Image (cartoon, rainbow, N blue to C red; front, side, top):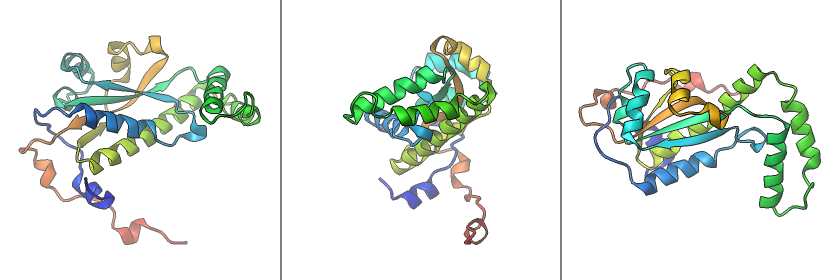
Length: 209
């Protein structure tokens, strides 16, 4: 296991994966890291689909814009946003929060009312954008956790979301794909691994006020 900065310098968006399969322990740790990600109001308006089946990934490949990583990785993580974020969803969240924090029923009613006032005033498009932003926060956490644990990854947003939704039957689950991440081990022949990391210099990137 590497320290954070060493891990982030080691990682890159893998272009070619080898045939290694990640262990259940590795996948479970990364799934848990994703679950523990911070989200606005703690609402976690997304779910994580872990796709280990190569047969299913083959079905997704035609909707992946030629990115064979979807098929060739060890596991594909799919972050799908909830499409039913309404007052009932929010009430269920705060009921769960009261139970998990050993609070009396209704103890968080005031906060829940405030959250409903904010969220329910949004349009469908605004809610979808908000949920998508939260899913991307989870993706960032996943990428960092993967790097620290020595797992290679490639995040992808360039794919046919409607096609993924159809193959995964997500409409029936009130979900829609936001972003995906291929996980596994880099192939020795992946030349991208040797390329210098390109980032804005720290002196230019960090602005002290």
